Amino acid sequence: MMDKASRIYVAGHTGLIGSAVMHRLAQGGFTNVTAVPHSELELTDTLAVDRFFDSTLPEYVVLAAGRVGGIVENQTFPADFMNTNLAIQLNVLRAAHRAGVKKLILFASSCMYPRACPQPMAETALFSGYPEPTSLAYAVSKLAGMQMCLAYNQQYGEKRFIPVIPNSAFGPNDNFDLKSGHVLSALIRRFHEAKEAGASSVVLWGSGTPRREFIHADDIADACVALLEGDVTQLQFPLNLGTGKDVSIRELAETVAGVVGYTGKIEWDTSKPDGAPRKLLDSSRLLAFGWKPKIDFTEGLRSTYRWYLDQLAIEGTADEK
Image 1 (cartoon, rainbow, N blue to C red):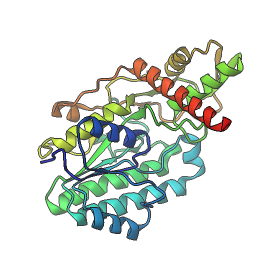
Image 2 (image 1 turned 135 degrees about the vertical axis):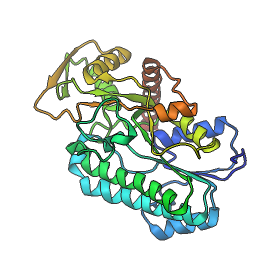
Image 3 (image 1 turned 30 degrees about the vertical axis):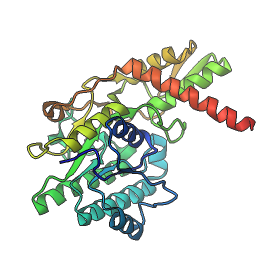
Image 4 (image 1 turned 30 degrees about the horizontal axis):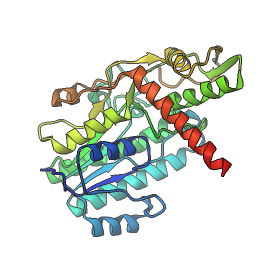
């Protein structure tokens, strides 16, 4: 069983989910957590990953590393998305199996589900149709990672590799780049910059009608630690990870504008793609395990915006020096 001194390796510890997992482990009193900067460990390098696992022998692994991005990034760099994510997953899972890890959590993606999928989306709907074309390369790479977890479990008669499927995550350490970020973080930045510039309107992509489910990274981290600590032998994998509530992109934009304090007009460029019409997860498997989300969506938005403002202040101070 996992204890406070267990050797834990978190890959992708500076990202949105990875940093939340690190924070949650620290809160839980876990004292033997390893996190290595990308500059010191290239996870696409097979030999480097093998050497790292041979020297550290982690007992538990959280694989939150990978290449992620919004619609523009997915459409511009599909080969990069596949190359990076497939290589990282292959290297880490293979090394973890060889090192005899007790449990590994891999974060897959709700993009894996068919574009036209019954809502809410149950895990049994995977592979029942064609994913959303605008994120196809990323979706296929994550499907491969999930299936690798299931294949290892099947071949070796164990349930050590746990693939979870979080819906759209947000929170501190999110990517606020307008080209590579996801919709929620991009909206925070767009409305903040529009407020600061006194812009009378902000033009957003699409119609605003697609619906999305958002989950705070801290809730994802709570689920992650619960799975590492708990008995998962009776669970059926993969596991959806969501709040059970969704909002339209139009509602999201209005809520974010309110949190940021932007009072101008919101316009919609319907010549731009919407993406999948709806992505709401059926998280009943994980709920039955005993986990449930705790963070209110609007309060989560407020705290994320406060974090974003803090980062701007830090960057501004650094620029002055």
